[in-house]
Image (tube, rainbow, N blue to C red; front, side, top):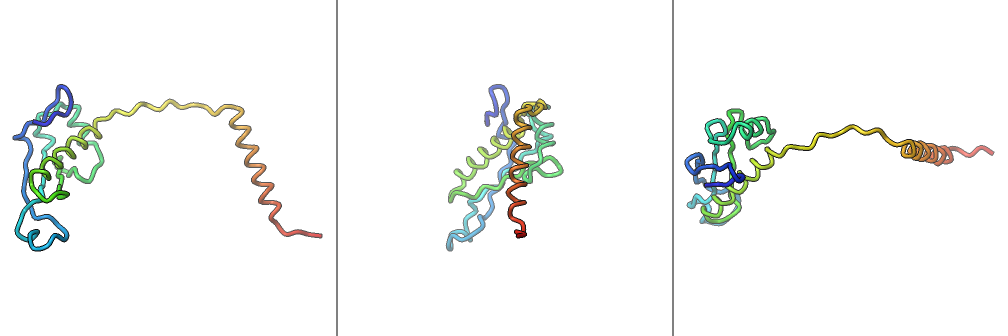
Length: 137
């Protein structure tokens, strides 16, 4: 059971693991051993609360398909078990990233002194650029 938060869990029957062959170099062993893992997690059919489902489905990430299935490919390690744990950790990370509620931005007005400083910098910069021009004797 994966613990998302104090009250939210993902149960093992909701996760689908498929062993696949890893990409890249690795000698002869890579051609006969399926050590990489494809983790599939269906958001809509999961036991997550509605808030989590809505946030995940609205989250813009290439690992979430149009059908609402999260697909994570883990192939960092040479054995299946460590790749499974890596895939689970990345799933939790994705869920937590999608459910972070960002603080609303309050619009502020620049202070008079900051506006004045900005205008002074602009005029000074303009004078520097003007001084670069052709010298007429």
